[in-house]
Length: 293
Image 1 (spheres, rainbow, N blue to C red):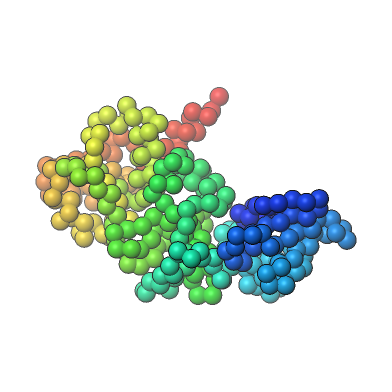
Image 2 (image 1 turned 60 degrees about the vertical axis):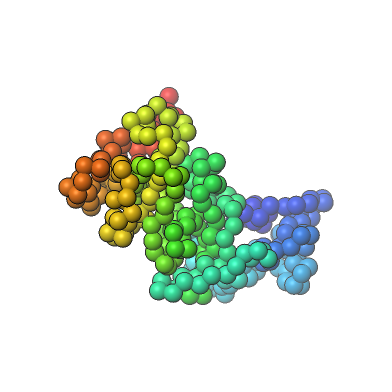
């Protein structure tokens, strides 16, 4: 049971013989009040001294995921790996985290915090993003859809909505908008999604010479969807130079072609990631080449 708790992001704060003490997975607290006793009667048992709840691993999962034993069995059988990205219906919030509700998507953001869950860190590592990059621009967002709660990597947009990603989910909370990272520059680099933006910054840090064709100082605009192109167009026209790094799929190439026809200030920079569908795909392939003996 201790290993399971660690896998879902809860680590013991104190160990005394066969007793492992944790901050409760069900609430925010300053003193560990959740104990796991290992090997007792041949099984691991938990006690939550804040609520009086106790039991074995099955009992814990039923409480944590708000499921009956039968629902838990079917959930694990149908999707064991993504099951770890479900969170309890009562999401954790600290005193300074405000609950926000967004209409239109059926998705409610319940808590926003620095990225701490090992599964999200592993996901970002698999996308070859440096920790110092994602910690600067992303958050761990806990959200609810209907009666189920989940968590994902979140990237905020200019109207307070969130782009949400984990290995099994790609979505957003409303309102949907682009994200501008402004530095007061006269030039801007445009990306389709925030993972490409994070990939660009990772490449810039690890291999700056590769990007020397681009200005050292620039604003960044992340569309978060090609559907937001027209909404962002007036802003893009205010820059002296617009460097386009849209995806190399048919939709991205078509939008790049349309932009190049608008003005000479629009420049196609897709040649920087030839052989890949987007910047993140190119970055991952480069990391795989480096690790190949």
